[in-house]
Figure 1: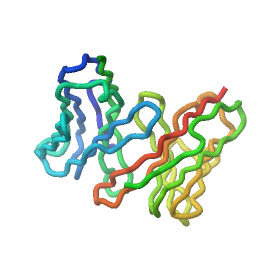
Figure 2 (figure 1 turned 45 degrees about the vertical axis):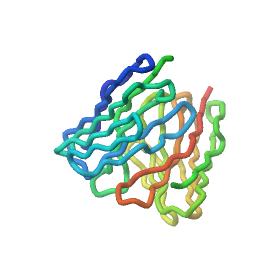
Figure 3 (figure 1 turned 180 degrees about the horizontal axis):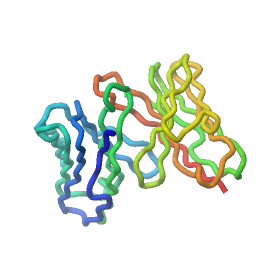
Figure 4 (figure 1 turned 90 degrees about the vertical axis):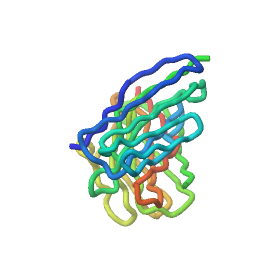
Length: 111
Length: 115
């Protein structure tokens, strides 16, 4: 069974702090996606990483795919209240059109 | 990316009744997905809906409880039947993008409360 475990489960920080969210699995994935979901909305795709060791930056967000393509991290620099939300990693399920979603990380950034 | 709308956005229903949730996409898509989400938690896939064929349900979900229609390439409905308070949740539809990575685009969700 392919599982994606995220840590931490909850994160509550002050504006301006840095943070890292982890997404881990024992399975190898062909690619991995990160989504952010704000209250009352559906998840929105932030990025897709494809190559082992790949690093992608989206403004203050840095995404990395592990060398073995089993894990990924999301680092946020100088967090802002607008970063508040549920962060989900996801990966294609082997040989299907479905996605496996991670367990989720709830981030709260206080002014 | 596709633009997806859902109706209703929220509803409060009585135990034993049924609610049909609509999902409309602004472009033709092959795959549509229905998820359930407890507030603040991750997504659980209910079923995959392809146009012209029966929906494929995940373990723990059955057609009698969650009948799905997919009459064309831009529309789908999910019915939550004979509701109980345990069905209180957020229901989301999504569609696959056109990339090779199975990226999905989501509707805003339907927040259901069953009393």
